[in-house]
Image (cartoon, rainbow, N blue to C red; front, side, top):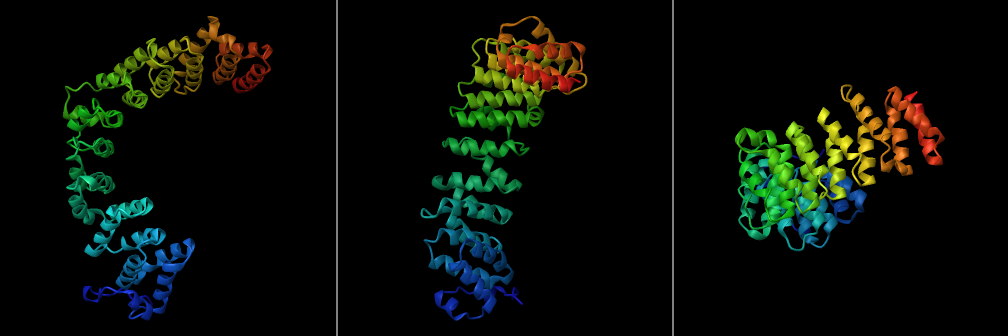
Amino acid sequence: MPDSSWSDSDRSDLDRSDLDRGGEFSQTLMAFLELLEVGDFQERWDAAKRLPSYGWPALQGTLALLRSHPEDDELAWFAAQIIGQFPSQEALTVLVDLLTSATTDEDVKGMAARTLANLGSEAIAPLNRLLEEERWRLLAIRTLAQIRHRDAIDRVVEFWDDPNEEVRAQVLAVLTCDRHPRILTPVLAGVTDLSAQVRRLATIALGLQHGLIEELAPEVDVVALLRERLLDLDFGVSQQAAIALSRLGTVEAIEGLGRCLRSPHTPIPLQLELVRALGWINHPGTIANLAMALSLPSSRVCLEAIRVLSQVSQPQLKPQAGQALIRWWCSEPPHRELARVRQAIALGLGNFEQPEAIAVVRSLLDDPDETVRWHAQAGDHLGG
């Protein structure tokens, strides 16, 4: 049976000759260490799963292999997993060395970071020391962020105004997922940061943590902040502002989305995001704004509005959505000249049981475009 009962006094360092002679290692343990050293990927995978059950001798053997084969990235990747099974100062030191070594492969660094994170609070102290060095700060923060421990999160938040935009962004990424009492200042500063990446993450945080932010500072108008971000020069920020407003789902949020949607200065990609965002809000006000979107100049926006209205499933809103589509269609808008719009209407109105909707679908069974007739047949089948 594997011997896993070694005491601290037994944890002696082993060199290559120790492995060759075997020493106190069992033959089975030696076989697994050999597979770890020279096996193919699957053999190393199997060995890495089995070695931790052999206790400290397995750790020392793994460390010896790691020292004797510093160029073998695959070995180092598996070794990082094994070492993480032994929460000790020695294991922490080796993992931090792997994390910070200039010669370590990125995949190995990633495994070392995940392993350190899995060690939990034991890893906070060595990572805190890395925070003091600017070159390792981002790496340390990313690793600390994976440790779901309040001490780790508290330490990360201290760097919300770091000169490095990647660090500021990482702090906001942490705050987005954690109800932290210090969220207010980083997020409010982040929404006007010079870095688009930071503004995007601050905007996401506004949407996900708006309840906490309003609790900490009732005077902060979250909707107003998000409306400003809808006008951001970076599309990624504007997109996240639309999503955040849909999460709020208030009348004020709907008005902000609708106002931006109606603006002639709003680019089409953002208009599409606004239509989708409105579609996530179950409120009569969204139907009115989506109905308005049907008549906007872009046929792409019109098609998206048809799709979103057709998918409304709330019993109290579905009749309104159907009526919005029927009224728009019967007004003979310019977009109905496009075959793809008629296809969308034929299929979309099939989701509604209203007699007027069924009548429109059946009228398209005689459309001159064959693909429209196919869609009308499908829509008629849905409505029937």
